[in-house]
Length: 479
Image (cartoon, rainbow, N blue to C red; front, side, top):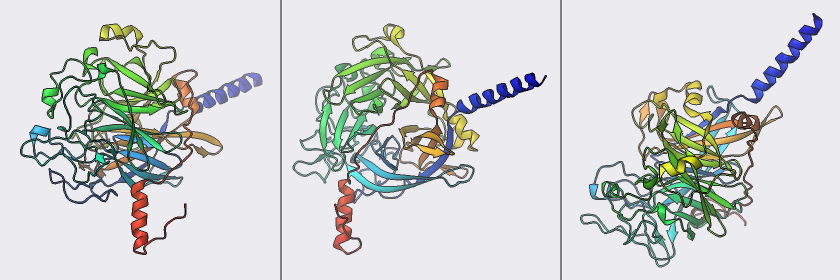
């Protein structure tokens, strides 16, 4: 009898250990930044639609870790929810930029959550080309050429008429709708993907200068460009309008970029299609490969918003509906799902849903974001409709246990709405997870942290310090 009690106790301890090791990732902190403030671009005046050229607005279309508690947050093409000119789909000459933010995570309770997250805007970096770009000149609107342009500095903007003749793959087009961002391992560059081209560019992180263009296969381009999405919808091949390269990841060694469309290409089924493409890009040579994954969840396709690299072949993909805060509805489906392309077929020369089906990899649920947030006390109506940016952060240690962190951000479309006590401003949600959490989803799944070695000072921040030092408000930091 005593032996039976001992055996039962051993089995109970083993079960508890297994359950603990396989506990789901959990929400530990939330931080906010108001979008109604000005950013640190130093821009003055208003855009064509009356919005401030320096409006902080939304900054969660993409989110990248840059080491420590430094992150790079990405607004998309700017405030186009203001109705003013249908010819350009209400887009304006908002200069493309990324924001440098400190997301300070401290182990002090904040409400029902065990950590406090304090976001602080550090710098705004404007993106430009050293060679001339194609700007728009729509009748009834001011020129699409930014007044800030100078010889050797031609700024990218979100206005939809900023393109030249030919297909959408022209790197001389000024229009840029940034959606994904990652920092290089040496900390000196950022990689940004966009929906208009789709494009993938490399920029100097300190100055915002474009330093490299990665040429994507022609199958991603559309032949008919237009300032109106209704016209672009007539294309039959290439990316779906407004659903281009939505997500971008970088391998832990920094040698490979991994991007994907928000929806399958038109020739693969388009919006609502089942098989999306993952494209890998060698950061040194520009060589590409393509792999397919099945984005159906319970018989339905969702928008693919972000991709994170756990290692060189295993990724987390953010699949979501468009419901929740900002849409006036209840969020129902927002998930991080694990996909493994190790040994998968390169589908660069394969088109069509039927042909991709046999090569497509399935996904497995890693984190139910809606479940985690409602479990933390939020209603489905208070969960942002557009959770789009995600990044891994620094590890944390609790009682000798190491946890990885994942930060998720929202794109509020430059519009603040409120449901109850929750405002759809810039939100940053922090989750913790263990290696066991990954392996519970897929045996052998591993996490490798990106090693970012340098954190250069952005030019806009350096200029701000210089200006303040000139009037005696701060001392210039020694370099």
